[in-house]
Length: 124
Image 1 (tube, helix red, strand yellow):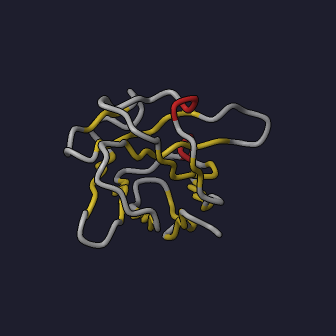
Image 2 (cartoon, rainbow, N blue to C red):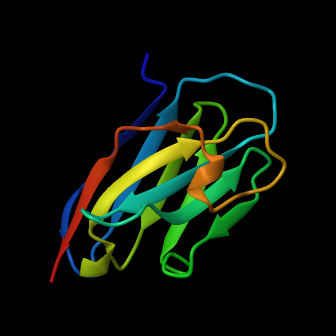
């Protein structure tokens, strides 16, 4: 059973915006984090942003000031609003979730559930 499903990827020109969403089918009262990661072909999985179930957020350097992560506990949905996209942002974007955790990790090694990914392509 697929637990996490991303949506909202696509193609935009440089300077444009996209909003990614991730629906999590897990129901838990434990503290946990969710995050967005991206990966280019031949590259490693890079953290973009993460958010804890208590609302605390963390951003990578490349995302800070341009991307905003949010979550809606009522719908178990996490979103990533991306502004001023640049060609370097082109990648497959994945959402992920941890198990029980009290902080907001940006390392992929803490995340145990992953979505299938959604492609973001930014042209110059």
